[in-house]
Image (cartoon, rainbow, N blue to C red; front, side, top):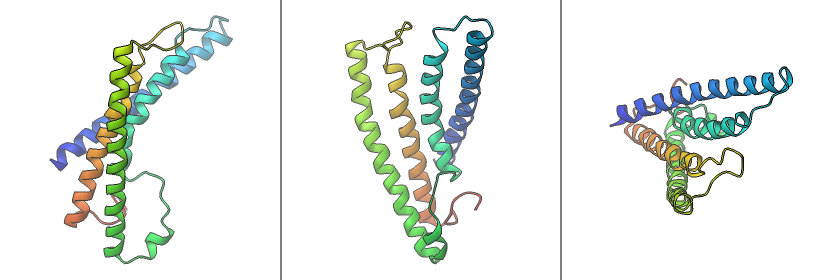
Length: 165
């Protein structure tokens, strides 16, 4: 199961990376259309924001898996490995709790947006649930990865400090 969660996080990370490339392409296209051809688009700004929400939410599990999160390590470095492991397990469980809240609170928002038929206040009128659903999905993946990391730490399989440290 841990390998499946890791593969899922890797896949999400790769997809997020490509989505960031797409965002760059959309913005380059918009700038070129606006300032070279004097013909701005009606879609580039909104679609780049939409894509950024998805890319950011999908990338979270990959970032945790590879321990690329911002961390304050001054105190951790001075701790013995056993104490550091306890702190990291507690941190993973805190991420699990926060992610669970994001999923539990995010799903009703998506359901309500679908029921109400809410759309963006732009010319595209994109259904809002299409971007809102990225939050519970992304945090669901983050929850799974944090659980996997906690299990690894409890089993003693991962060095405190995470992958690659």
